[in-house]
Amino acid sequence: MNITPTTENRPRQKDNNDDKSNFVGFANLPSQIHRKITKRGFEFTVMVVGESGLGKATLINNLFLTDLYPERHIPTAQEKLRQSVKIDASTVEIEERGVKVRLTIVDTLGYGDNLNGTENYKSLSNYIDNQFERYLKDESGLNRRNIADNRIHCLLYFISSFTRGLKPLDIECMKALHHKVNIVPIIAKADALTTIELIRMKQTILQQIHDNHIEIYQIPDCDSDEDEELKEKNLELKKCIPFAIISSERTYEVGGKHIQGRMYPWGLVEVENNNYSDFLKLRSMLIIHMQDLQEVTHEVYYENYRSNKLQLKKFIDNDEKQKKLIQEKDIELRRMQDILVKMQEHLTEKQK
Ligand SMILES: Nc1nc2c(ncn2[C@@H]2O[C@H](COP(=O)(O)OP(=O)(O)OP(=O)(O)O)[C@@H](O)[C@H]2O)c(=O)[nH]1
Ligand SMILES: [Mg+2]
Image (tube, rainbow, N blue to C red; front, top):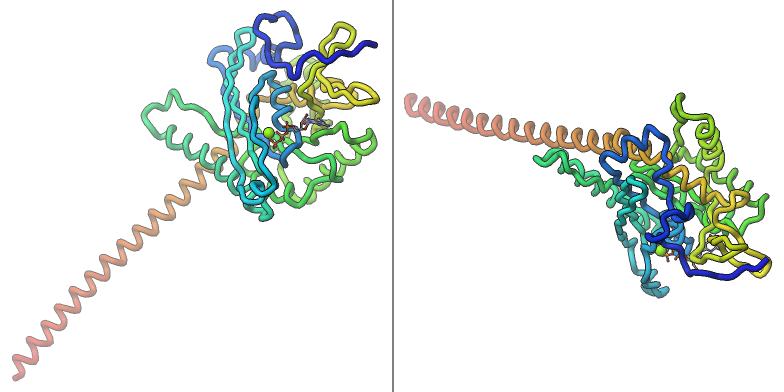
């Protein structure tokens, strides 16, 4: 078969609206969600975390048919040793058949480069908290109707396929963040693994997640009135966690079709081939459960942050009240002592 490279990447092409491959799929949402979204549009923020070079930017570009990172600076080894994690947010507006999504991608540069483990995820944790804090402030402000939601709804955690499972840093980082954000684990560059290696790697990772009490995002069941096809698809999504991902910047023309893939001397590895890549499943999961990811963020993680903050405020207020009370008592005591001294002086005067 004749295979020819076509483009370096496949960003959305506005003038080719009938091509199915030109859509992310927001328009194919389950009917109930679709109705809710079209009215007011949707704000969705994804954070990508993983060591340098694991294919974070490539996956994001493939998933959302964007070209978010046209120019990037590759740091030198010396820069890497010194730098802490840099966080960079970019937003794109995607509109498909009337469904508007304001998608923000939060990229984390230099993760894993610092030799001090904690340094690698401290700034991620701070960033997530800062977004909660911003939302909390906006929520208690006057303009509550138009709050921009920049909270992280989903964290795609990239695990290297060159190791046999999670590294200590992966475990530490997930444990530091799992009560703040929905973590979706991903095996990056899955084309480096044979079928058996991939099955083993998935088992090992799930076991490590269980043994370390890490709480990753739990895909919810479908509503009972959703159609059978969607319910079955959902079960498949649940089974394939962690998602094994293959992504690529290149498109090839095979028999008249444009295929996103990676060309090797022995053949073409297709990004969207369900036999060995969970790319399409990951994209379906993000679209079908976009609203659930938002709700869990709001109802569980944000609520957690808010109530902790309130408790802390109460504690500080109480502490201040007590300090004030002690100060008042202190003044009172000194006043009494003064009176006592004066009375004693008066008494000795009289005795004299
Ligand atoms: N084998 C293989 N290579 C991949 C895959 N996805 C991306 N790559 C390649 O990996 C290299 C790095 O990809 P990027 O997307 O820039 O990786 P990144 O994680 O954003 O890297 P940093 O920005 O440096 O942290 C590129 O040469 C990609 O072509 C994959 O699924 N398999
Ligand atoms: Mg990158």
